[in-house]
Each structure stands twice: as structure tokens, then as C-alpha cells.
Amino acid sequence: MKAVRFHEHGGPEVLRYEDAPDPVPAPGRVIVRVRACALNHLDLWQRRGLERVRIPLPHISGADVAGEVADGGGTFAAGTRVMLQPGLSCGTCALCRAGRDNECLEYTVLGYMNDGGYAELVSVPVENVIPIPDHVDFVTAAAFPLTFLTAWHMLVTRASLARGETVLVLAGGSGVGQAAIQIARLQGARVFATAGPSKVEATRALGAEEVFDHYADDFSKRVKAATGGRGVDVVVEHVGEATWDRSVRALARGGRLVICGATTGHRANVDLRHLFARQLSLLGSYMGAKSELLQAAQLFFRGVFTPAVDRTFPMSETAQAHLRMADYQQFGKIVLVP
Ligand SMILES: [Zn+2]
Image (cartoon, rainbow, N blue to C red; front, side):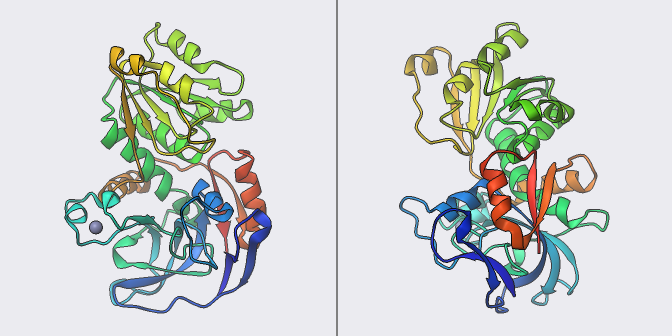
């Protein structure tokens, strides 16, 4: 098969579009012919190399996949149209059995420590395969799983977002941001967001009531002004160092800050006096459980959620796709097509 691999860590130039061995059929696994694979920031971290993480090389990234079953391992007919659960877990421990598979000790993401979807074929456990209806195209399906799973777990499970509450979504035009706005609206929340100047209008169109420029504004002051001086009940963070202080200041008393990533850096300070006196909650969130993705997928298939697709690139131009993501130029998901 053709695949995009890197043999050493570095810039986009280490990505090679080349021949690679086909995945071998194995019990309990399904081989999928990739029709679309969306990018995530994790792909950039993998390519650059991570402290204290040794990724097996050469490596094929790619967590968000849609395609057709090539070898269904006796479970799915060849040709079945599917998208893939991006979370992999042991399936047998107490946490997996309890439906908390994203807390499994063996939990990992497709295309992280294993080969993912930057290829014509990918092998996954049978429980990671989700059939999709005919009216859902492959590019849109590939844009759905990781960000909607992440945002669902953040808002619904971790932050227990309630009807009528207020939410601030950081970087509303990002993959996680556009998913979080749609989920928060469905939960009946009032939604505010931040975005770069070129993305303000499109972010508002997703359902954000007001969108603040996160480069120019102290958005915490704008949020306070928009909420009668109170602040928001929930902040959805994934930007990290560049926005952390303003995100904490934007919280109302009793507010919850939920964070799933730190694309601009991982160092942050917390004024402990604010934490206790304002009764704040800081909530970490990582991916989400398979059951949550299945719940969110039903809403996607019914047209309640529409993943924002920035643009597609041929898989042979993955380096250009990485550059676009690294520059924060995209609105929504960038998708590779083999
Ligand atoms: Zn497990």
C-alpha cells in the first residue's frame, strides 16, 4: 500500500509518501480501506517527537479515519462504509468493562504508538468499527470522531454542563472548538467563543453568541461584560499557556475549567487564593469513552452535528496539510484523501 511515514522526527519534510507493507489480517481485527483521514494536533507532536515517548519508527500517524471494510474478520461484510473509534484499550480490565475505556492503563490513540490512517489500509480492533449511513460522506465522517468525542467528554461528562449555563469555548474555529460549540448549544447553554480575526464570523455561525479576538482582546473582560460581571460557568480550554490566565479569570464563582490539551505550551500558574475563594474546579479531560462516541454519532448521523471541514489534501501532500495546521490557518478539520 501507499502510506505517509516518517523514519525520523523533525519538520514536515520528514513525511514520506511511499510504499509500506499492507497490514496483515489477525483475529479480532478488521482491515479498512481508508477513504479519508483527518489531522489532529497530536499528529504534529508525534512528527516533531515527544519528551519521554518513544514512538516506533517508521511511523504512520492518523487517528480519524473513514473508509470501507476490506477484510471484516467475519464480523463486517467487505465494502461496509465505516468510521473508526480513535481510542484503543485492552477491553478486559475493570475500567474497560465499566465503560471507562479512556481510563484503561493500556489506553492509547489510533496512530500514536501504533500505525494509523495516513495510508491506503489500516488495521483496527473490531470494536473500533462504526458503520456509517449512506448519506454521510467519508470526508465529513473522518472529521467527526476525535474532536466530537473529546468535546462531548469535556462538556457532558466532566463539566456536567446544564441547560441555561454559560460556556466560553477557546479557539472556536479549531477542531475541538467547533465541536464544543455545537455540543454546548445542544445542551441548551449560552455559548461564547474566542477566535482569530479571520475566523470570527464562521465561529459565530456555528452558534456562538459573541466571539472575541483571542489575539487582541483580554477576552476575560469581554466575557465578564457579556455576563453582567459574573463570568461563565464553564471554560473549554485546549490552547494552554497562551490563554490560561485569561481563561481562569473568565470563570464565574463556582465555575469549572475543563482542559483537554495545551497546543501553545504546558506551563501554567494557578493563584490558589482564587481557586478556593472563588470555589473553582479545574478538570482534566482526555479523549472519551466508546459509549460517548456512539451517543454523539447518533446525533451526527441525524444531522444535529455537522463537523466543520476546512479543506482536503491529497495524501501525497500531507506535508502541506501539516504546515496549514501548524500555522493555525484552518477553520475546522483538515482531511487527507488517499
Ligand atoms: Zn482496559
